Image (cartoon, rainbow, N blue to C red; front, top):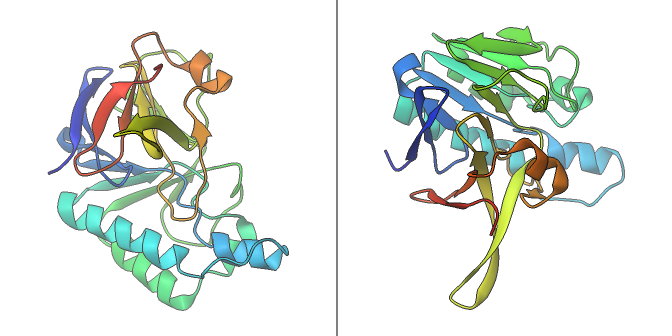
Length: 222
């Protein structure tokens, strides 16, 4: 598997090229901020018209990760849908693909700030979930007991210069105490990992794991 292994609260986990987090010993896959239905929501609210392919692309990414890892548990760390209306307006073809992915495994939907209500889909809906030494929630809690927090929400990204070119890459942040996952969905923006809110959450030795094949760790503060 083309991932980057690291230790979080004693658990050996893997940052996947997609932005997912794989915990092999628990057979658990965590993904965050799918934002399914983003193009539909933007069109509905009079925003920019985006090609309506984000849901299909995001689900294809999820299908690939599930095929590669065969998880017993999938945890979606909130903002799985761009809003409650997008969840209710999920096309039949997308609902069918999601149902197929959920079959035969435990599926946990963590409440996000974009999708606070029930989605009408199967699975378990929780504010947060505890699995072994890890706690999964949507937004990092600066007062949470550590180590072992896994969250999303901020869509971290980093900017760096490569061969004279300035590029932006989605990244997973970790300092061994907590991990903040990047947005998994297509058409999602990001927050620079130098932002004060992220700087305050992460310890002095935090790394940004740049998404790609394979993912590459760099110091978060460069």
